[in-house]
Length: 277
Image (cartoon, rainbow, N blue to C red; front, side):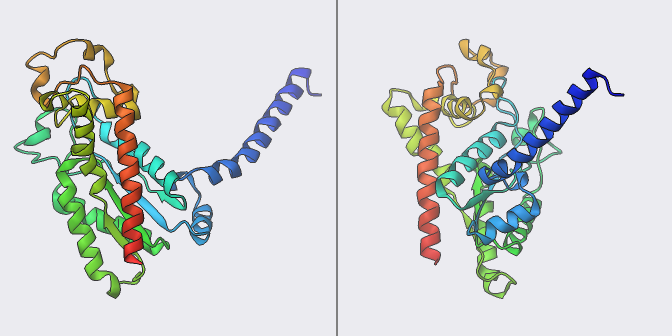
């Protein structure tokens, strides 16, 4: 005969299972993340009109002593999710975290610093082509490449151009791929102008791991920022992988940048898709 404790445990377990079963449909309905959906759920989502898919591309690279190596990956995930939610009827593919970062041996560019992972440009572009074709095969009509790193923007454009040249002869002539370079460009233009209007100088704003970069990370992945290091000047050795000064970066500053990126990207996607149709 079961004890009172065993009976309670069984009831508790049954309750958890029922709660999980009830929550599953709601969770699948709410998410825009492709890898959080089952295959039949994704098929139904596409059949229901969700024919736009965002392919976020990050990087695994050094960003000085105060920003973690996955900065771009986390940022691309957060921003792509917000963009998809604003667009409606859109899905977000998993973030591509491995990108060209310079020669591995002898090490060049960010490969000179621990933790950076680099792949050849040709491999990167072939990977993007195959990923886009896979998404087209499953029924998406608009594949949007969102690159969070400046170093491979030209690759995104080459990939989109290649797929467009081959589109009408492919098994998926209605599926188009877009290199949404506006997504990255706004971080180097409108966001910089916004910061300058607040009195920050360009050498403080920086181009890598400086004020702007750190602020965006505070707004997307604060756990990746070593905030204790923002309270002091970096030593010459620490500054080796940093262009800019991150010390005055704030969450509010980063949130303003996020709003600019999301607004600009949503508008650009809608415009590109409308033009294509």
